[in-house]
Image 1 (cartoon, rainbow, N blue to C red):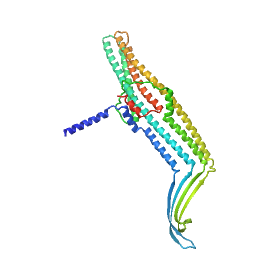
Image 2 (image 1 turned 120 degrees about the vertical axis):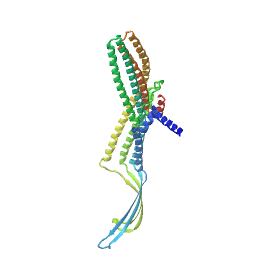
Image 3 (image 1 turned 90 degrees about the vertical axis):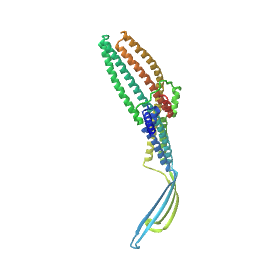
Image 4 (image 1 turned 45 degrees about the vertical axis):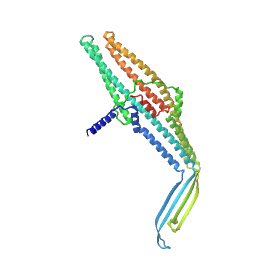
Length: 433
C-alpha cells in the first residue's frame, strides 16, 4: 500500500514537472496548428471549393427522378351518371446532357478554384510558421530586455550605495549621489515598461496558440549565423515558381478566363437525351381511362436567340473581373519580388550586425571596466561610469536582438520563396535549449 502511494506521488510530481517545463519552439508550433483559426478556415475553404466543383460537374451526369400521384376523383354532369374513382400515375424521368458547353466550362472553372483554395491553404500554413517564430522570439526578446533592465537597475543600485558611502566620508560631492538616484529611478521606470512589454508579448503568443505558457526555452549560445549561399536572383526565381500566394493569384486569373469562356458559351445550343417511362389510368383533366404504359426517348434542343442583352452584359462583367484578377496577380508578383529582396538584404545585414554587436560587447565591457578604474582615481565622473555600464548592457541586448531578427528574416525569406515547411520548425527547434 505504501509502495502504491509512493508511486502515485512520484507520478504526480513527474507530470507537474513536465507541465512546468519551459516550452520549446516545436511545442508552441504544435499548439498553434491545432488552434489557429486562419489555417483551419483556409482548410475548410478547400473542402467548400471541392463541394462547389462537385455541384458544377453533377449537371453533366445523368439526372433521374421518380414521381407519382394518387387522386380521388368525382365525375358529375347532366348527361353522365355520377362516378367516383381513384386515379393512379407514376413516372420515371432520366436525362443526360449531350452538349452543354456552358456547364462544362463552369466545371473547369471550379477545378481551378480548388487549386486557388489549396494554394491559399498552403500559404496560411506557411504564414502560421512565420507568425509562431515571430511571436516566440518576440517573447524571448522581451525576456532579455527585462532581464538586462533588471541587471541595469541592480548595477545602478550598487553604485548608488557606494556613492552614498563615499559621500558620507566626504570623498565626492552630493551631485554624484543625485545623479545616481535619478538614474536609478529611470532604470526602475524602464523595468516596469519592460515587464509590461513581456506580458503583452505573451498575450500575442496566446492569441496564436490558445495556451498559457509560463516560460519559453531560450536560444543556444553557440550558433552559426551564415549569409544565404545563392544570389538574390536565384532566390527570386524560386519565389516566382513556388510562392503560394502568387500561385493562388495565377489560379484565380485562369478561373476568371474560364468564367469569360463560360459566359461566351451562353450563345451555344444545348442538347439533352431524355427517357421517360410512365404508367397511369387517368387522362386529360383526370378523366378515367384504361391503364396505359408509355415509354419515350427524345433528344431535346434549345438555342438562345435573344435574352434582352443579358448574355452580352454577363460576358462584359466577366471580362472586367478578369482584368481585376490580372491586376491582382501583377500586384502579388511585385509584392513577392519586393519582399524577397528586402528579406534577402536584411538577412545579409543581420549577419554583419551580429558580428558587429559581438565586438561591441567586448569593447563596451572594457570601457566600463576602465571607467570604474578611472573613477577611483578621479579622472572620470559618476556620469561616465553609469553611461558605460548602461552602454555595456545595451550592447548585449542589441546582440540578442540581432540574433532574433536573423532567425525571423530567414524564415520570412523561405516563406516568400515558397520553401517553408514544418521541417524548418523542427530544424529551428534545435537552435533553442
